[in-house]
Image 1 (cartoon, rainbow, N blue to C red):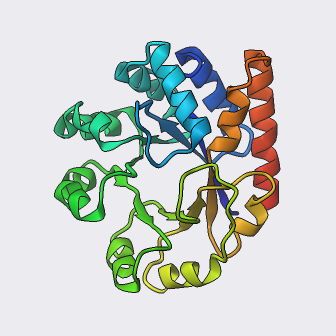
Image 2: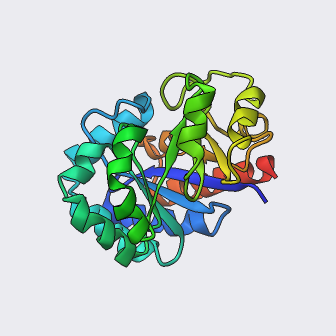
Length: 245
């Protein structure tokens, strides 16, 4: 069974909604929840997620909101935190990673932390049984892919193209996937540009998909009630899970 990871922006439009949505998604085909930490300059994300980030911050999001959301959700659904390094660094990683373990958060996704710098925190993550998700991109050389994936935990985040999240770009991923799987048994999940229309093609040869902008597009629709947003996100999750399996 191939896996579905769903990204949602923490605290948007409010904390209680994030909890309700996350728990509902976990009951409707989502295997892992990726809670985005709102940040003023989310450089790897496209306009939809950037807009949700800015709106969450305008609504008063604080890091403690992420902790309170995770405290409820993580015991029920496999949970990751996705954010930019500054957001985590300001919380003191020596304290934050053990706290993540205590909350039952299973990993962090930090797109602007290069592999070489991530090695500085390798023992901290390992000793607390929290994964630091590794990224590989089409621009990586074979030697670099081998190095990055050699000790990857939980899954490898395979960037489907060179760009930002939410783009509709399409590339032939099979040679890229082959070069990754040559060096690791860790599952490979495809991210960037995955939606209900592209999921079936994107997941070919991979072990799962990561979907963000397609969910955030629903959350940004102000004409929808909270109940409608949750319903539509759950329906999308079920469709994508069906498409990839």
